[in-house]
Amino acid sequence: MKQAFLTTLMFFASLTAMAEYQLLLPVTGGQESPVFFIDFSQFKIQTDSLKLKTAAGKEIPFSLDCQYAPQKEKGRFYYTQVNGYHSHLEVPASEKKLSWLGYLSFKAEPGVKEYRLSFKAGTEAIQAAPNPDVRCWWIELMQDPELRKPFGGPDFFYRNSAQAEVMENGGWELFRPGGTITIMPNAYRFTERIRGRRVIQYFLAEMDGNTSIVAQVPLTNASNPKWPVVTGYMSLRKGVLTEVWQEGIQDSQTESIWFNAGKNCRGSFWVVQKVTGKIFEIHVQSPPQEEVVQARVLNSLLNIGDTLKVDVLELGQNVLQPMRFKLIDPAGRSQDVIGAREDCWADGAELHIVLKDRAGRTVAATVGKELLIDNIPAGEYTVALTLYSCRQDREIILQQKETLLIQAGPQW
Image (cartoon, rainbow, N blue to C red; front, side, top):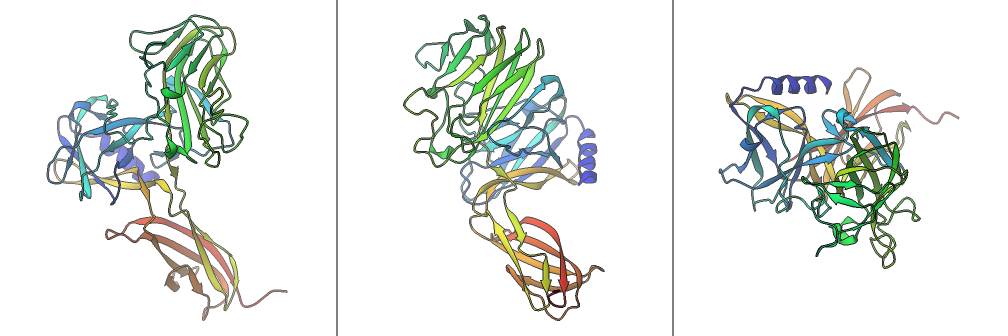
C-alpha cells in the first residue's frame, strides 16, 4: 500500500503542464447522486480545466467539495472513528490536517456506468468548485456555510448577541467580548434522512485572546441524550487561525431528529472567555460510515470434523468504500489512484473461503459462509476471505486473512 501511494505521488509530481489526463470513475446502478473521494490536496491541477463527461462525451455538471476529518492515513483515504459524544480536534489551520478537497458528486445519467474526469496539470493547488444544484445532499447541510447572510432579514438564520458583523468576503467579526451567536433551525438543511447518521461540524476561526468556544448542532445524540449531537468546549489560542472538527451520531430512536424539539431548538457559538474574534466559515456534513462491512470468523480454534463458520455484517448500509481508480495519461498509460466511492451492497454478496497451510498451499475452499474441516492434518492454517459483489460487474468488497488452529480432537 505504501509503495503504491509513493508511486502515485511520483506520478502526479511529474504531470506534464497543459497535457490532459483522464480519471475513470465507475458507478453502480441505482445511485441518484454518486459520490467519490479523491484526495486532490497534494496535486497541482488547473481548476477551470476540470470536466466531467460520460464515455459518449456528454458533459455533466459536478460539485467538488471538502471532506472534514482528522488525518488517519490508509493509502490516501482519510477516515474517522467516533469516540463517544464528544469527539473533537482543534488544529492550527497552517498544519492542514482537518480539511481535504476531494468529494466529487453529481447527478447520475440513466444507464451510464462510467464517467471520466479530465483535467490539465497546472502550477497552483486545485480549488474547490461547489455546486449546490448537483451536490449530494449530505456533503453540505448549512444553508450559508460561508456566513454571508445578514443578521435578521427575511431568512433569519442567526440571532446576534455578540455585536457581530458580516465581513466583506463572508464570515463574522465578533465585537462583543464573550458574546453568543444563535443559529436557528432553518439555517440547516436537516431532514429525516439524517436519522442514525454521523454528523460532523467544522469551523474556521481566529480569536483575539485565548478562549473556548461552545459550538453546538441541535440534533439528538445517540451517545448521550442530555446533549446535542455535537457539543463541548473547543480551545482556541490567541491570534492562531484554527480549524475545529466535531463529530457525533444522531439518535435514530427519538421521535424528532431535533434536540429540544419545540422548546429551545437551536445551534450556537458561545465565546466563553471574554474576547473578540472572527469566525470565517461553518460546515456541517453527514457522511456514511467507512468500511463498515466486515467478515468475522466465529471460532479460530476447531477440531477435525467441525465446520468453520463466517458471519458477514452490515452489507445493507451505505459506506465510503475504499477503491482504486484508473488515471490515464496523454500517452494512454494508466496509473492507480487510491480513493473511495459511496456504495451500498444491499443487492448481496458472495463469500469465498480458502484454507491454506503454512506453506501457502490451498487445502480446502468453498463459496458460502461455512467450510467443513475434514481430511486435513491438525495444525495452524490461514483462512483467506474474499467478498465479491453480486452485480454484473463483479467487484471485491472485502479481503482479509485470519489464523485458524485445527486440532485432532478436544484437548481436555
